[in-house]
Amino acid sequence: MPDITEKNRRTVQAYDAYAERYAEVTKDGRSEAGAEAFDTFLAHVKPAGRILEVASGPGWDADLMESRGFTVRRTDISDGFIAVQARRNKHVERLDLLRDNLGRHYDGLVALYVLQHIPRMLVDGLMERMAHAIAPEGALLLSFQIGEGERTETGSSGDYHVVMWPREEMEALITSHCFDIVWSRVDDDTEGRWVTLVAVMS
Image (tube, rainbow, N blue to C red):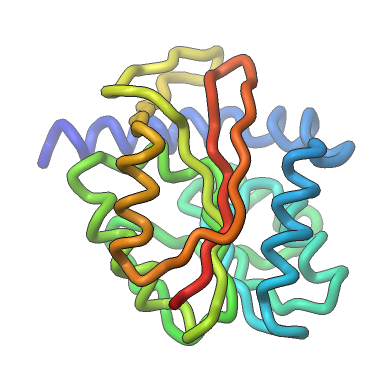
């Protein structure tokens, strides 16, 4: 899959270059949508539970979850974001969602603003692996971009490969892997229209 590998590599490189700036512009807090999403998600995770966060970025969401008594395994594929968190004395494991073992028996899994960078043909398999990683009755917090097809976003730091999904198609895929969607929200930003949802293992 040389084309897929190259698109993924260029996306990661773009995030490496933008990590410091991204951390700076997002450090002052989350949106109303983000606050509602985390409140809902954490209400479905058992108290003091273990949470796997993929694409941890600068780590602000992990900070929030830990402040509420949860244990968070912070992971990211971007060396730039790993370095940002290391400077804050936070440990982040390097994790490649397409190749690495996710582990098992998490009470929750967070995958925000990452699915849009996963090649379409690999998402079904990734969803199966995420379902396998979550304990019975555990919860998933996920976002994806609504739309059709794929595009390349070019920014000051490089190119980002973006895969969009019709809402009904993605939600059907999620529920096919033994998840019940218990909450969802649609929001618009400068990049497009997004669905954020919470699903629980049935």
